[in-house]
Length: 99
Length: 350
Image 1 (tube, rainbow over the protein chains, first blue to last red):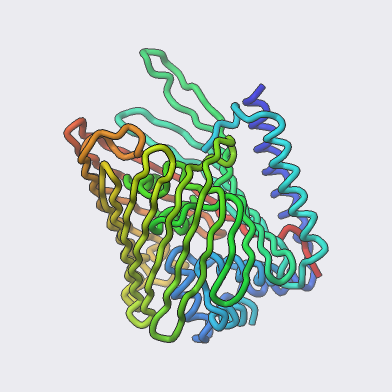
Image 2 (tube, helix red, strand yellow):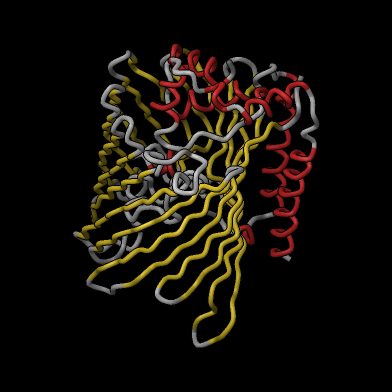
Protein backbone atom coordinates (compact mmCIF):
# COMPACT_ATOMS: atom_id res chain seq x y z
CA UNK A 1 0.00 0.00 0.00
CA UNK A 2 2.83 2.38 0.84
CA UNK A 3 4.48 1.68 -2.50
CA UNK A 4 1.22 2.45 -4.21
CA UNK A 5 1.05 5.72 -2.29
CA UNK A 6 4.54 6.61 -3.41
CA UNK A 7 3.75 5.83 -7.02
CA UNK A 8 0.50 7.79 -6.86
CA UNK A 9 2.31 10.76 -5.36
CA UNK A 10 5.13 10.64 -7.91
CA UNK A 11 2.64 10.26 -10.75
CA UNK A 12 0.64 13.17 -9.38
CA UNK A 13 3.66 15.43 -9.21
CA UNK A 14 4.74 14.47 -12.69
CA UNK A 15 1.19 14.97 -13.94
CA UNK A 16 0.99 18.44 -12.44
CA UNK A 17 4.33 19.36 -13.94
CA UNK A 18 3.31 17.97 -17.30
CA UNK A 19 0.05 19.90 -17.19
CA UNK A 20 1.85 23.09 -16.28
CA UNK A 21 4.33 22.62 -19.07
CA UNK A 22 1.55 21.84 -21.52
CA UNK A 23 -0.20 25.07 -20.51
CA UNK A 24 2.60 27.18 -21.88
CA UNK A 25 0.35 28.63 -24.53
CA UNK A 26 1.75 31.27 -26.85
CA UNK A 27 0.87 34.38 -24.89
CA UNK A 28 2.80 37.58 -25.40
CA UNK A 29 4.78 36.92 -22.25
CA UNK A 30 5.63 33.43 -23.42
CA UNK A 31 6.67 34.73 -26.80
CA UNK A 32 8.97 37.10 -24.98
CA UNK A 33 10.30 34.19 -22.95
CA UNK A 34 10.82 32.18 -26.10
CA UNK A 35 12.68 35.08 -27.59
CA UNK A 36 14.79 35.18 -24.45
CA UNK A 37 15.57 31.49 -24.87
CA UNK A 38 16.42 31.83 -28.50
CA UNK A 39 18.49 34.93 -27.97
CA UNK A 40 20.39 34.50 -24.73
CA UNK A 41 22.74 37.18 -25.99
CA UNK A 42 20.07 39.66 -24.95
CA UNK A 43 21.05 38.87 -21.36
CA UNK A 44 24.78 38.95 -22.01
CA UNK A 45 25.77 42.47 -22.79
CA UNK A 46 28.72 43.13 -20.52
CA UNK A 47 26.49 44.92 -18.04
CA UNK A 48 27.00 45.19 -14.28
CA UNK A 49 24.21 42.64 -14.02
CA UNK A 50 26.24 40.16 -16.00
CA UNK A 51 29.12 40.67 -13.60
CA UNK A 52 26.80 40.04 -10.67
CA UNK A 53 25.47 36.91 -12.35
CA UNK A 54 28.96 35.53 -12.96
CA UNK A 55 30.21 36.37 -9.50
CA UNK A 56 27.22 35.31 -7.43
CA UNK A 57 25.16 32.85 -9.46
CA UNK A 58 27.33 30.94 -11.90
CA UNK A 59 29.91 30.23 -9.25
CA UNK A 60 27.57 27.48 -8.06
CA UNK A 61 25.50 26.54 -11.08
CA UNK A 62 25.36 26.98 -14.82
CA UNK A 63 23.02 29.57 -16.19
CA UNK A 64 19.60 28.25 -17.14
CA UNK A 65 19.17 28.09 -20.90
CA UNK A 66 16.18 30.38 -20.61
CA UNK A 67 13.08 31.08 -18.58
CA UNK A 68 9.86 33.05 -18.94
CA UNK A 69 10.25 36.69 -17.92
CA UNK A 70 7.33 36.52 -15.49
CA UNK A 71 9.47 34.57 -13.00
CA UNK A 72 12.57 36.75 -13.20
CA UNK A 73 11.59 38.63 -10.04
CA UNK A 74 10.99 35.38 -8.17
CA UNK A 75 14.38 34.00 -9.23
CA UNK A 76 15.97 37.24 -8.16
CA UNK A 77 14.41 37.17 -4.71
CA UNK A 78 15.47 33.54 -4.28
CA UNK A 79 19.05 34.44 -5.24
CA UNK A 80 19.01 37.45 -2.96
CA UNK A 81 18.42 35.15 0.00
CA UNK A 82 20.64 32.28 -1.15
CA UNK A 83 23.60 34.35 -2.33
CA UNK A 84 23.14 37.24 0.13
CA UNK A 85 23.01 39.77 -2.68
CA UNK A 86 23.29 43.41 -1.78
CA UNK A 87 20.53 45.78 -2.89
CA UNK A 88 22.56 47.34 -5.76
CA UNK A 89 23.54 43.90 -7.01
CA UNK A 90 19.91 42.84 -6.89
CA UNK A 91 18.85 45.75 -9.08
CA UNK A 92 21.67 45.14 -11.55
CA UNK A 93 20.79 41.47 -11.76
CA UNK A 94 17.13 42.22 -12.37
CA UNK A 95 18.06 44.45 -15.31
CA UNK A 96 20.31 41.67 -16.60
CA UNK A 97 17.66 38.95 -16.29
CA UNK A 98 14.84 41.09 -17.57
CA UNK A 99 16.30 43.79 -19.84
CA UNK B 1 15.58 11.78 4.45
CA UNK B 2 12.51 10.15 5.97
CA UNK B 3 10.88 7.00 4.79
CA UNK B 4 7.69 7.67 2.94
CA UNK B 5 6.41 4.33 4.13
CA UNK B 6 6.63 5.55 7.70
CA UNK B 7 4.64 8.69 7.15
CA UNK B 8 1.33 8.95 8.88
CA UNK B 9 -1.63 10.00 6.73
CA UNK B 10 -1.91 13.10 8.91
CA UNK B 11 1.67 14.16 8.10
CA UNK B 12 1.25 13.54 4.40
CA UNK B 13 -1.98 15.47 4.13
CA UNK B 14 -0.67 18.25 6.36
CA UNK B 15 2.29 18.72 4.05
CA UNK B 16 0.18 18.65 0.91
CA UNK B 17 -2.38 21.02 2.42
CA UNK B 18 0.31 23.44 3.58
CA UNK B 19 1.98 23.55 0.20
CA UNK B 20 -1.38 23.99 -1.52
CA UNK B 21 -2.28 26.82 0.83
CA UNK B 22 1.00 28.57 0.16
CA UNK B 23 0.43 28.23 -3.54
CA UNK B 24 -3.06 29.67 -3.33
CA UNK B 25 -1.97 32.44 -0.97
CA UNK B 26 0.43 33.76 -3.53
CA UNK B 27 -2.21 33.91 -6.24
CA UNK B 28 -3.44 37.23 -4.93
CA UNK B 29 -0.08 38.87 -4.47
CA UNK B 30 2.00 38.13 -7.53
CA UNK B 31 3.28 40.97 -9.68
CA UNK B 32 4.19 40.61 -13.32
CA UNK B 33 7.70 39.31 -12.63
CA UNK B 34 6.94 37.62 -9.33
CA UNK B 35 4.95 34.61 -10.41
CA UNK B 36 5.67 31.63 -8.11
CA UNK B 37 7.84 29.06 -9.81
CA UNK B 38 8.46 25.36 -9.67
CA UNK B 39 12.01 24.29 -10.26
CA UNK B 40 13.98 21.17 -9.60
CA UNK B 41 15.37 18.10 -11.22
CA UNK B 42 14.25 14.71 -12.44
CA UNK B 43 16.84 12.04 -12.87
CA UNK B 44 17.90 8.44 -12.93
CA UNK B 45 21.07 7.57 -11.07
CA UNK B 46 22.93 4.27 -10.92
CA UNK B 47 25.63 3.49 -8.40
CA UNK B 48 27.84 0.39 -8.47
CA UNK B 49 29.66 -0.01 -5.19
CA UNK B 50 31.70 -3.14 -4.53
CA UNK B 51 30.00 -4.91 -7.41
CA UNK B 52 26.43 -4.14 -6.30
CA UNK B 53 24.41 -1.80 -8.46
CA UNK B 54 21.64 0.39 -7.09
CA UNK B 55 19.15 2.24 -9.30
CA UNK B 56 17.68 5.51 -8.08
CA UNK B 57 14.88 7.21 -10.01
CA UNK B 58 14.56 10.58 -8.33
CA UNK B 59 12.52 13.75 -8.53
CA UNK B 60 13.39 16.82 -6.49
CA UNK B 61 10.84 19.61 -7.00
CA UNK B 62 11.34 23.03 -5.45
CA UNK B 63 8.68 25.70 -4.96
CA UNK B 64 9.54 29.39 -4.68
CA UNK B 65 6.62 31.71 -3.95
CA UNK B 66 6.92 35.44 -3.24
CA UNK B 67 4.21 36.96 -1.08
CA UNK B 68 4.10 40.73 -1.08
CA UNK B 69 7.32 42.70 -1.31
CA UNK B 70 9.30 41.25 1.58
CA UNK B 71 8.26 37.64 2.01
CA UNK B 72 9.39 34.55 0.18
CA UNK B 73 8.29 30.99 0.85
CA UNK B 74 10.54 28.23 -0.40
CA UNK B 75 10.45 24.46 -0.22
CA UNK B 76 12.23 21.52 -1.76
CA UNK B 77 11.34 17.87 -1.53
CA UNK B 78 13.02 14.70 -2.70
CA UNK B 79 11.18 11.61 -3.86
CA UNK B 80 13.33 8.56 -4.50
CA UNK B 81 12.53 4.97 -5.36
CA UNK B 82 15.61 2.87 -4.62
CA UNK B 83 16.15 -0.50 -6.32
CA UNK B 84 18.98 -2.51 -4.76
CA UNK B 85 20.21 -6.14 -4.75
CA UNK B 86 18.53 -8.28 -2.10
CA UNK B 87 21.82 -9.63 -0.71
CA UNK B 88 22.18 -12.55 1.68
CA UNK B 89 22.59 -14.96 -1.23
CA UNK B 90 19.19 -14.05 -2.66
CA UNK B 91 18.85 -13.10 -6.28
CA UNK B 92 16.84 -10.22 -7.62
CA UNK B 93 16.17 -6.71 -6.41
CA UNK B 94 14.23 -5.15 -3.60
CA UNK B 95 13.07 -1.56 -3.48
CA UNK B 96 12.16 1.23 -1.10
CA UNK B 97 10.36 4.53 -1.57
CA UNK B 98 11.38 7.71 0.20
CA UNK B 99 9.89 11.16 0.45
CA UNK B 100 11.68 13.86 2.35
CA UNK B 101 11.38 17.60 2.70
CA UNK B 102 14.81 19.24 2.46
CA UNK B 103 13.46 22.58 3.56
CA UNK B 104 10.25 24.52 3.99
CA UNK B 105 11.07 28.06 5.01
CA UNK B 106 9.72 31.57 5.05
CA UNK B 107 12.21 34.34 4.26
CA UNK B 108 11.43 37.84 5.49
CA UNK B 109 13.67 40.32 3.69
CA UNK B 110 13.95 43.07 6.30
CA UNK B 111 16.49 45.33 4.62
CA UNK B 112 19.59 45.26 2.43
CA UNK B 113 21.63 43.64 5.20
CA UNK B 114 19.23 41.30 6.93
CA UNK B 115 16.89 38.47 6.08
CA UNK B 116 14.99 36.49 8.72
CA UNK B 117 14.44 32.83 7.91
CA UNK B 118 11.99 30.68 9.83
CA UNK B 119 10.91 27.08 9.42
CA UNK B 120 12.97 24.15 8.23
CA UNK B 121 16.10 25.26 6.39
CA UNK B 122 19.35 23.76 5.16
CA UNK B 123 21.94 23.96 7.92
CA UNK B 124 24.42 26.67 6.91
CA UNK B 125 27.73 24.91 7.50
CA UNK B 126 30.34 24.93 4.74
CA UNK B 127 29.21 25.30 1.16
CA UNK B 128 28.05 21.92 -0.08
CA UNK B 129 24.74 21.68 1.75
CA UNK B 130 23.28 25.00 0.66
CA UNK B 131 24.91 25.43 -2.73
CA UNK B 132 25.78 22.10 -4.31
CA UNK B 133 23.38 19.52 -2.91
CA UNK B 134 20.61 19.87 -5.54
CA UNK B 135 20.91 17.05 -8.08
CA UNK B 136 20.85 19.53 -10.96
CA UNK B 137 23.84 21.44 -9.57
CA UNK B 138 26.36 19.05 -8.02
CA UNK B 139 29.06 17.68 -10.30
CA UNK B 140 29.07 14.33 -8.51
CA UNK B 141 26.10 12.20 -7.56
CA UNK B 142 27.64 11.47 -4.15
CA UNK B 143 28.14 14.07 -1.46
CA UNK B 144 31.64 14.55 0.00
CA UNK B 145 32.66 12.18 2.77
CA UNK B 146 32.72 15.02 5.32
CA UNK B 147 29.24 16.24 4.42
CA UNK B 148 27.71 15.25 7.76
CA UNK B 149 30.30 17.13 9.83
CA UNK B 150 28.68 20.35 11.01
CA UNK B 151 25.37 19.71 9.27
CA UNK B 152 24.26 17.83 12.40
CA UNK B 153 23.40 14.55 10.65
CA UNK B 154 20.06 15.69 9.25
CA UNK B 155 21.49 18.56 7.11
CA UNK B 156 18.35 20.51 7.97
CA UNK B 157 17.51 22.65 10.96
CA UNK B 158 14.16 23.70 12.40
CA UNK B 159 14.08 27.14 13.94
CA UNK B 160 15.33 30.54 12.87
CA UNK B 161 18.21 31.99 10.93
CA UNK B 162 19.58 35.45 10.24
CA UNK B 163 21.53 35.99 7.05
CA UNK B 164 22.52 38.69 4.65
CA UNK B 165 25.21 40.88 3.19
CA UNK B 166 27.15 42.60 5.95
CA UNK B 167 29.20 44.71 3.58
CA UNK B 168 29.41 44.99 -0.17
CA UNK B 169 31.57 47.05 -2.50
CA UNK B 170 33.30 46.65 -5.83
CA UNK B 171 36.29 45.13 -4.09
CA UNK B 172 34.88 42.97 -1.34
CA UNK B 173 31.65 41.26 -0.26
CA UNK B 174 31.12 39.98 3.26
CA UNK B 175 28.11 37.86 4.06
CA UNK B 176 26.99 35.97 7.12
CA UNK B 177 24.49 33.49 8.51
CA UNK B 178 23.63 32.61 12.10
CA UNK B 179 21.03 30.09 13.17
CA UNK B 180 19.44 28.27 16.06
CA UNK B 181 17.67 24.96 15.68
CA UNK B 182 15.36 23.20 18.06
CA UNK B 183 15.27 19.43 18.38
CA UNK B 184 12.57 17.86 16.28
CA UNK B 185 11.68 14.22 15.82
CA UNK B 186 8.89 14.86 13.33
CA UNK B 187 9.51 12.60 10.35
CA UNK B 188 9.42 15.46 7.87
CA UNK B 189 11.14 18.04 10.06
CA UNK B 190 13.87 15.99 11.69
CA UNK B 191 16.51 18.17 13.33
CA UNK B 192 18.98 18.29 16.19
CA UNK B 193 19.12 21.06 18.77
CA UNK B 194 22.09 23.10 17.59
CA UNK B 195 23.41 26.52 16.79
CA UNK B 196 26.05 27.89 14.47
CA UNK B 197 26.81 30.13 11.56
CA UNK B 198 29.07 31.02 8.71
CA UNK B 199 30.91 34.10 7.51
CA UNK B 200 32.39 34.50 4.04
CA UNK B 201 34.58 37.05 2.36
CA UNK B 202 34.47 37.30 -1.44
CA UNK B 203 36.94 39.29 -3.50
CA UNK B 204 35.26 39.93 -6.87
CA UNK B 205 38.39 41.03 -8.70
CA UNK B 206 40.30 37.91 -7.73
CA UNK B 207 37.13 35.80 -7.84
CA UNK B 208 38.22 34.29 -4.56
CA UNK B 209 36.01 33.36 -1.62
CA UNK B 210 37.08 32.24 1.83
CA UNK B 211 34.75 31.39 4.67
CA UNK B 212 34.56 30.10 8.19
CA UNK B 213 31.81 27.91 9.65
CA UNK B 214 31.11 26.96 13.22
CA UNK B 215 28.48 24.75 14.76
CA UNK B 216 27.61 23.49 18.22
CA UNK B 217 25.44 20.49 18.87
CA UNK B 218 23.36 21.17 21.96
CA UNK B 219 21.57 17.87 22.23
CA UNK B 220 22.79 15.28 24.76
CA UNK B 221 26.58 15.53 24.41
CA UNK B 222 27.56 19.05 23.45
CA UNK B 223 30.00 19.00 20.54
CA UNK B 224 31.73 21.68 18.51
CA UNK B 225 32.28 21.68 14.76
CA UNK B 226 34.57 23.90 12.78
CA UNK B 227 35.00 24.36 9.05
CA UNK B 228 36.65 26.52 6.43
CA UNK B 229 36.06 26.78 2.71
CA UNK B 230 37.97 28.27 -0.17
CA UNK B 231 36.60 28.79 -3.68
CA UNK B 232 38.47 30.27 -6.59
CA UNK B 233 37.54 30.87 -10.20
CA UNK B 234 40.45 32.18 -12.24
CA UNK B 235 39.01 34.79 -14.58
CA UNK B 236 38.35 33.77 -18.19
CA UNK B 237 39.57 30.26 -17.56
CA UNK B 238 36.34 28.23 -17.24
CA UNK B 239 38.03 26.56 -14.29
CA UNK B 240 36.39 26.31 -10.89
CA UNK B 241 38.25 25.27 -7.77
CA UNK B 242 36.30 24.49 -4.62
CA UNK B 243 37.47 23.11 -1.32
CA UNK B 244 36.28 22.54 2.21
CA UNK B 245 37.77 21.38 5.46
CA UNK B 246 35.69 20.34 8.46
CA UNK B 247 36.56 19.15 11.91
CA UNK B 248 34.35 17.38 14.41
CA UNK B 249 35.02 15.93 17.86
CA UNK B 250 35.98 12.50 16.51
CA UNK B 251 36.99 13.04 12.90
CA UNK B 252 38.11 15.61 10.39
CA UNK B 253 38.55 15.75 6.66
CA UNK B 254 38.65 17.79 3.48
CA UNK B 255 37.69 17.74 -0.17
CA UNK B 256 39.12 19.64 -3.10
CA UNK B 257 37.26 19.78 -6.41
CA UNK B 258 38.31 21.14 -9.78
CA UNK B 259 36.06 21.29 -12.81
CA UNK B 260 36.70 22.66 -16.23
CA UNK B 261 34.06 23.45 -18.83
CA UNK B 262 35.61 22.87 -22.23
CA UNK B 263 34.61 26.24 -23.67
CA UNK B 264 38.09 27.59 -24.21
CA UNK B 265 38.46 26.35 -27.75
CA UNK B 266 34.88 25.50 -28.63
CA UNK B 267 31.51 27.15 -28.26
CA UNK B 268 29.03 26.20 -25.56
CA UNK B 269 26.91 24.34 -28.10
CA UNK B 270 29.71 22.38 -29.72
CA UNK B 271 30.37 18.71 -29.12
CA UNK B 272 33.56 19.43 -27.18
CA UNK B 273 32.22 22.51 -25.43
CA UNK B 274 29.53 20.47 -23.73
CA UNK B 275 32.05 18.33 -21.83
CA UNK B 276 32.98 19.11 -18.25
CA UNK B 277 35.73 16.98 -16.68
CA UNK B 278 35.79 17.06 -12.89
CA UNK B 279 38.28 15.81 -10.32
CA UNK B 280 37.77 15.62 -6.57
CA UNK B 281 40.18 14.49 -3.91
CA UNK B 282 39.01 13.84 -0.39
CA UNK B 283 40.38 12.44 2.82
CA UNK B 284 38.96 11.75 6.25
CA UNK B 285 40.94 11.22 9.43
CA UNK B 286 39.36 9.28 12.26
CA UNK B 287 40.61 10.06 15.76
CA UNK B 288 37.98 8.20 17.80
CA UNK B 289 35.24 5.71 16.93
CA UNK B 290 31.87 7.32 16.35
CA UNK B 291 29.11 5.39 14.68
CA UNK B 292 26.84 8.41 14.39
CA UNK B 293 28.92 11.13 12.76
CA UNK B 294 28.38 9.79 9.25
CA UNK B 295 32.03 9.48 8.30
CA UNK B 296 33.78 6.21 7.41
CA UNK B 297 34.76 4.13 10.44
CA UNK B 298 38.45 4.30 9.45
CA UNK B 299 40.57 7.02 7.90
CA UNK B 300 39.79 7.06 4.19
CA UNK B 301 41.24 8.47 0.99
CA UNK B 302 39.14 8.82 -2.13
CA UNK B 303 39.85 10.11 -5.61
CA UNK B 304 36.82 10.90 -7.78
CA UNK B 305 36.97 11.35 -11.54
CA UNK B 306 33.91 12.55 -13.43
CA UNK B 307 33.00 13.48 -16.95
CA UNK B 308 29.77 15.43 -17.25
CA UNK B 309 28.09 16.22 -20.55
CA UNK B 310 25.63 19.08 -20.97
CA UNK B 311 22.92 18.21 -23.47
CA UNK B 312 20.49 20.81 -24.84
CA UNK B 313 17.24 21.56 -23.01
CA UNK B 314 18.74 21.48 -19.49
CA UNK B 315 19.70 17.81 -19.58
CA UNK B 316 23.00 16.67 -18.15
CA UNK B 317 24.70 13.28 -18.13
CA UNK B 318 27.05 12.57 -15.25
CA UNK B 319 29.52 9.72 -15.11
CA UNK B 320 32.08 9.15 -12.41
CA UNK B 321 34.59 6.65 -11.10
CA UNK B 322 35.89 6.71 -7.55
CA UNK B 323 38.67 4.76 -5.92
CA UNK B 324 38.32 4.56 -2.15
CA UNK B 325 41.18 3.40 0.03
CA UNK B 326 41.06 2.69 3.75
CA UNK B 327 42.41 0.23 6.27
CA UNK B 328 39.02 -1.51 6.27
CA UNK B 329 38.67 -2.06 2.54
CA UNK B 330 39.57 -0.73 -0.86
CA UNK B 331 36.80 -0.40 -3.41
CA UNK B 332 35.70 1.03 -6.72
CA UNK B 333 32.54 3.10 -7.07
CA UNK B 334 31.00 3.74 -10.48
CA UNK B 335 28.14 6.16 -10.85
CA UNK B 336 26.11 7.39 -13.78
CA UNK B 337 23.18 9.70 -13.94
CA UNK B 338 20.98 11.65 -16.27
CA UNK B 339 19.28 14.72 -14.85
CA UNK B 340 16.75 17.09 -16.37
CA UNK B 341 16.39 20.48 -14.75
CA UNK B 342 13.04 22.22 -15.00
CA UNK B 343 12.16 25.81 -14.23
CA UNK B 344 8.60 26.89 -14.92
CA UNK B 345 6.07 29.42 -13.64
CA UNK B 346 3.11 28.04 -11.74
CA UNK B 347 0.82 29.90 -14.10
CA UNK B 348 1.13 32.08 -17.15
CA UNK B 349 0.58 35.41 -15.45
CA UNK B 350 -0.21 38.63 -17.23
